Length: 108
Ligand SMILES: [Zn+2]
Picture 1 (tube, rainbow, N blue to C red):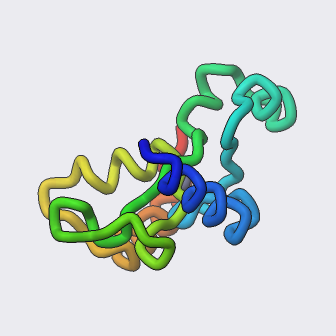
Picture 2: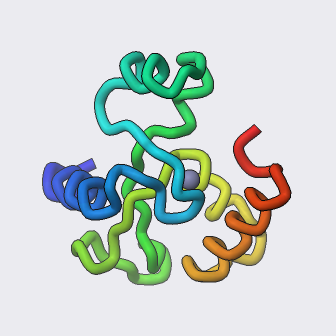
Picture 3: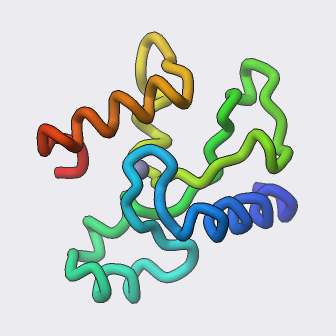
């Protein structure tokens, strides 16, 4: 990842108060051990909450690395959005994730 993208991701992280744009759970940027201790979860569980740069419009669809196109998403949500056969828009995916959370079925 380029330094610029890293900075943009860090900026998005701060703007979103350290929470994932999709699941709204707290994320970590640099220290999973400290995060796991604070959240009272295991190191393995903490890995999925790593802050990633989410391209709202995907690179393959021409999305750029500019701040307007980058949001902070946890690794789990980011991977799942792009694993779907039919890719949802960020708004659709956020709706999907929040619905799953309401039913207790997103982050195991
Ligand atoms: Zn998330």
